[in-house]
Length: 112
Image 1 (cartoon, rainbow, N blue to C red):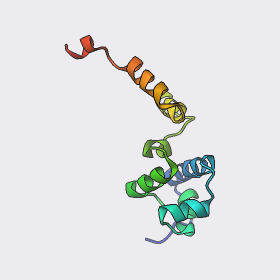
Image 2 (image 1 turned 180 degrees about the vertical axis):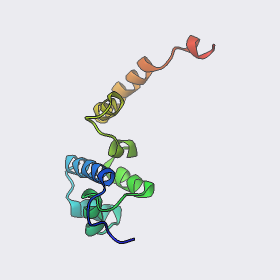
Image 3 (image 1 turned 45 degrees about the horizontal axis):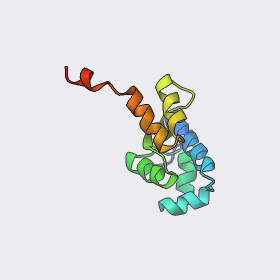
Image 4 (image 1 turned 135 degrees about the vertical axis):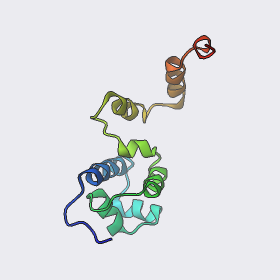
């Protein structure tokens, strides 16, 4: 498939999120491309919205960035659910476990 001449709006939103997460991780485009076994051009095209990433591509990038695929496809300025996902991304494991416990239905509610 030939490269787009204009960025796809959805691919661009995901690409911008990948770039932000890459920069937060302190990685250059070259370093992430090397670690993900992508060409620099391909990663650059992903970040600029010229290529729609596959689920497999997103998983490879998520693994290298230490995030979930959901972190790359959600908008931290979007819905409340997306904002919660973004806010919990950097919480310590113990805090996350407590949050899950607090938000989970009680055992008595589950047995109904």
